[in-house]
Image 1 (cartoon, one colour):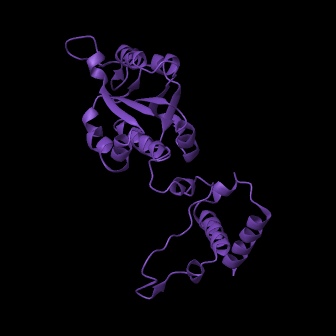
Image 2 (spheres, rainbow, N blue to C red):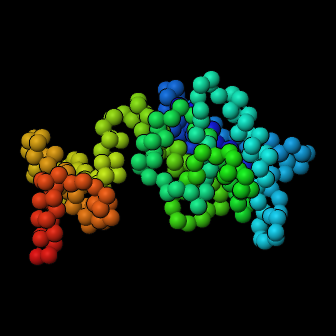
Image 3 (cartoon, one colour):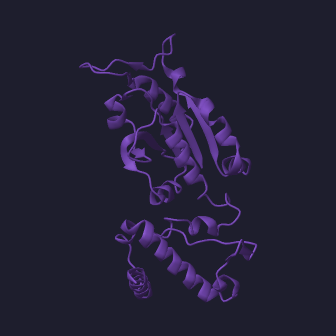
Length: 248
């Protein structure tokens, strides 16, 4: 997979792209990551990429021409037959979720556009991008940090990136529920013991315990997620029992 980021601050990505999981994924040839300064496409000696908004108002607006030229240059170097998704990082966009990460992880090429200043010329939204994404209902100084979050989330889903392929499958939100509790050695720490069921070696009972605990954690912390889930009869029974336990 190839992911390109258009940004005014490519140096922000240097450590991110070469460290930890992302760095290893590139070393393995699973993903290709690059950060491109779209100021080089400004077309004037001052490298101007923004201007005052028509109609007045505070702040500066990113001009369409440098961003269009940058994207078109990347498209000219795209493998034949590949149609990239062009993603605008924007607080007005669709809220990024695990489901969206799974969807984008099936693509061959993604281009992220990171803005600054007051906003983008509307023609960028209308005639260039395929997606607009936000990582939450708040405003940051630029789109770089959200792009890093999304790239990390997508990369870890690609086959061969994680050491244990089941890790991504059982993550919080991947199953619709928050993830169950984890324990490791020692069995007892400061008087707190690992649940006996996890030491039993009975895999079916362990899986039931994990699913039930995931259901409990989701019900207590994110009950809104349960509204979108189709629960099995066993899970509905567990949920009723959990609710009764909490009432008493």
